[in-house]
Amino acid sequence: MQLQDILYSQGFGPRRLCTGLVQNGLVSVASELVTDPSADFEPQGLRFTVEGKPWEYHAKAYLVLHKPAGYECSQKPSAWPSIYTLLPAPLRQRPVKGGQPGVQAIGRLDQDTTGLLLMSDDGAFIHRMSSPKHHVPKVYEVGTADPVDAKQVARLLAGVVLDDDPRPVRAAACEATGEHALRLTLTEGRYHQVKRMLAAVGNRVTTLHRSRIGAFEVPPDLAPGQWQWLSPAQLAAVSQRG
Ligand code: URA
Image 1 (spheres, rainbow, N blue to C red):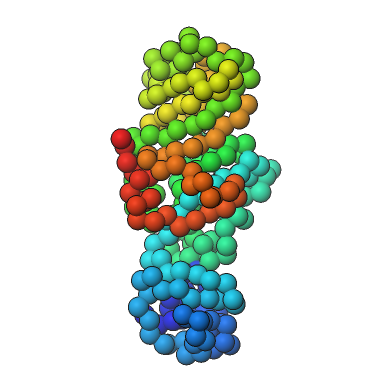
Image 2 (cartoon, rainbow, N blue to C red):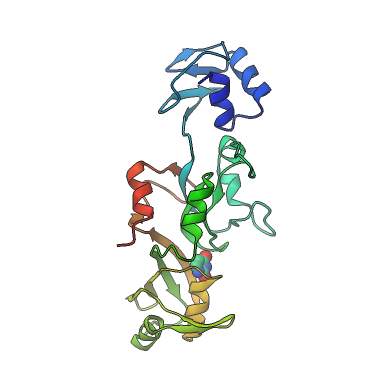
């Protein structure tokens, strides 16, 4: 694949710009400056730098963001900064055939919720992961305003009715982890589901953190506001139901 096409595919801007980046001596491959835009490289696993910043070729982007509080998951946020501002420009600009450019968040977390947020530019993956039929467990660490009692835990497990749907929603697992804390596992995702479930049992969420998706937990070295590519093993783990 030509170097200019590699840069274009990775989101370094329109083709003309990518050609110019190479011609102007701003791109190195394996520490060697390359000034021929049509120089050919095997893209898989290719590491290169653009204007001194290292990058790695990925045919499709699968990544995880540790969402911090105070960010909205929308491209056009209403009151808070967008999570998309936490990503480097190439991830926001990657060309997507027949779709809007760049990676997209898979599902949404509220502005004040922290934790795991998957992002991708693979339409089929996004569709599969967001489908209501895709019952991957998601684990939430919940801080509560009032003490958690056994009755509340039992009701969350038995199922509660939310105001927009007569079908009860139940937690796949729920345990108190402190006087004002519980761990809740959900296998479906309705709007503000955790907050509304807690309200339905007479409590109120004060803090909310998504700590696990499938078998994938927040990597210990991934601080709030940081993102990383998902390795093949991590990508398999996010779809794991057990
Ligand atoms: N449930 C909520 O209420 N909010 C979130 O951000 C995620 C799940």
